[in-house]
Image (tube, rainbow, N blue to C red; front, side, top):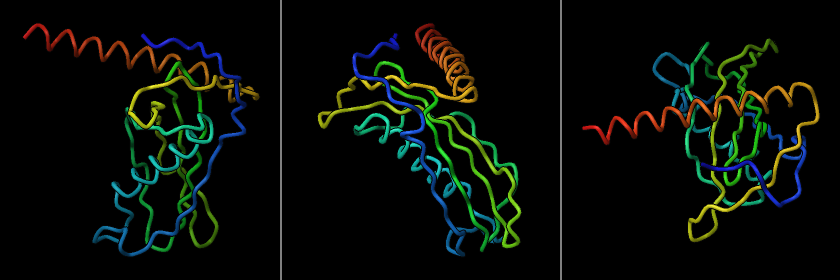
Length: 169
């Protein structure tokens, strides 16, 4: 089991927060003129990876993405705003939260989607290596830090359950 200890100096959440903005173009839309879900998932992965890279100063691979719900459609010509923040760093992995908004031409904003991604820091030989601890600064960041620990426990329990189910076949 991966431990949360790292000898590297902790880094504040604010150093790695990332934001990406896109205008939805026709080639990114379905026949109804709404942004393709796969394109949004790609943007979520990229934005999360940017925050992770800024924190770890390392190559990262996406290990998992928690459930993604598409709450409302984003139409061609509307703006998509993605914000990512490292919630917690473990020994070689980190959890990044990404929140997505849509902005209409009139300037109205609405929540589109949220996701939690797990990244693993690797070297050029694809071996995992330690990442710096995260230093939550605000009450919101401290809450996200605690929540990330609970989500990790749930993920690890699910992995163990699946492993046990496979071995009993």
